[in-house]
Length: 249
Ligand code: NAD
Image 1 (cartoon, rainbow, N blue to C red):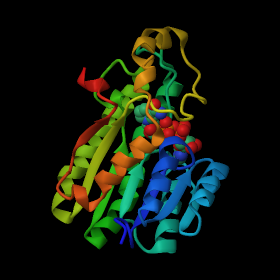
Image 2 (cartoon, rainbow, N blue to C red):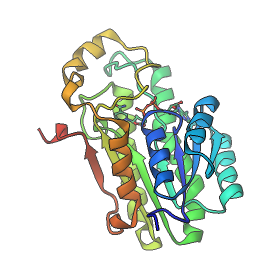
Image 3 (cartoon, rainbow, N blue to C red):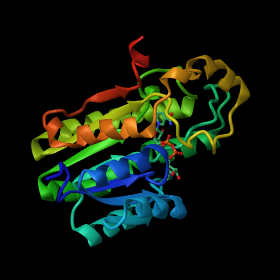
Image 4 (spheres, rainbow, N blue to C red):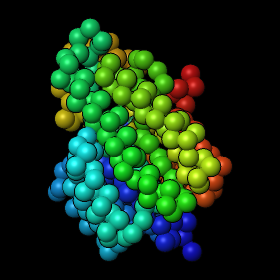
């Protein structure tokens, strides 16, 4: 018997990095996994790595219609969603508050914060019907401090922390738990698509130059697996740093 036998896990941003590691970890623990990403090829690659019990769905978490189609596909295929990992996210340009462009602000808030809200909003009715559910949000160290990223990313991840607490508080009585992990710097592809603002990046580089504290995506997946599991049955609304101790210093 595996911890997630008979359970369905829906993971966003599962085509790369932390999300892919989560998809593989939940599948290994017995779950049927809905592997969702805005990038079709990446989603399909993750599903192929899992094998049989995985469904790849292309979806933009920042788009309500796309999210509705994603949750419909998950329910259509498996009839339920037991675990939701709101993991899709993008980095900002590392720009400081005076320098950030409204376009980057809008996009980062839309994907990182509104995206987590939209998927949660679409999945909650199913979890309420089931009388059970576990949500794990991938926030960031930037969700609790001001100097770990640019203004947009920092604001978006503080928002994810607030959303986590709101959902945890609202639905504890309904058997639904919601927690967040705060990854420290992790080896993924997230920096690849970001065009850094040199002034902001230079200001932040001392905090980011933490070679020995760089995590592997699997270490984030392990934390998410715990928070979504019955071993964490009374853990609700927790904001959990997974950073090797960085935030403790
Ligand atoms: P990654 O770039 O390797 O993976 C992110 C995935 O999300 C990609 O496959 C991408 O295609 C997908 N994605 C982007 N926009 C999307 C959208 N609108 N809809 C659906 N999917 C979308 O990055 P990662 O580091 O694995 O990031 C995962 C999460 O971890 C993010 O929320 C990120 O903010 C958070 N995080 C990462 C780090 C780090 O150091 N890597 C640190 C703290 C928090």
